[in-house]
Length: 161
Image (cartoon, rainbow, N blue to C red; front, side, top):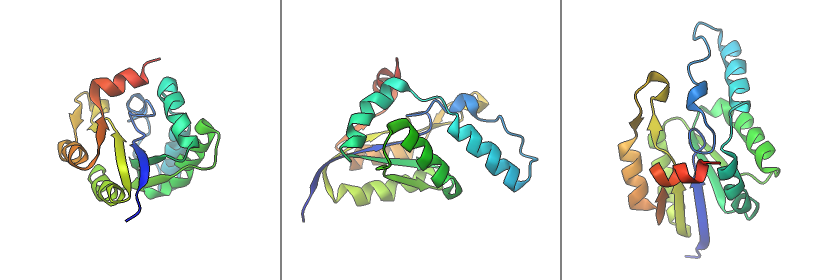
């Protein structure tokens, strides 16, 4: 089997983008089309962790990055366009999965094709409700599958300006 050398799998929400402060802003009583528009606008306006974007940018341009995030598939185009804007290239690799747990099969599949795989993800949820929790099983799987996992304090250091 021919292996490509290295890949970085990078989450978006609360990893590349400072998402959690913007959650819970849209009323759930809106029509489906109105909710789609409101959520799309919110995603396009998410604050980016600029230092982390700059670090990742070099690897994006070398085609070493796959963005893997738990977002509904209807937001693929909005997400892709935001990444194109932030990294100034249309050469973006992006996979959206419906749930955080669905990242695991993607990581397993990619691990068969790359000799080194780094996963960068905060593995968290619940910020907007005041209690941060973690996708422990997804994090544990990432540690088993990947060559390197960057999360927690190490991720915070990359995000800080």
